Length: 203
Image (cartoon, rainbow, N blue to C red; front, side):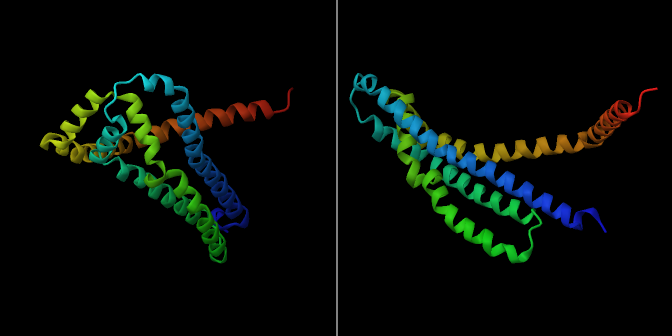
């Protein structure tokens, strides 16, 4: 029987999925902790904020965020997280009859993830962070830039450049793969030799 089809191996894959899923959820839950930290920081800096020149800082921050399309990135991260959870489950080797259990789990978890990660629930956090990081003059300059043709081109090009960069990194890693495999095999052999020597009976 092939190792990957053995019951023991299937159980290991399912346990690995549950562990990775727990880590994903812990990362998602950190969004709520971040929110609390931001709210606390906002309260701690209330007196400093009161000294800022009046001028609708939050309104400028919101306009800047709207122009920068950050809402798409935030919601994109939420969708990516959901997709990763589904992919991890599908790779776990769980039997088909277990799928309803996972689907029920996702239906219960999804509202929590939305509350923690979706733009409509986190928008005020980002507005607070931006308004605390830039003064009105700086925000106006940022708004002018992102409203310009060059600013719009920048917003359009940055994700594309990031994708091209990732593709180049993957290509370089693929080129390194044979050498990495050789080095990994050599390391494994050396470790096995040390373990075998350690386990050998003394003369």
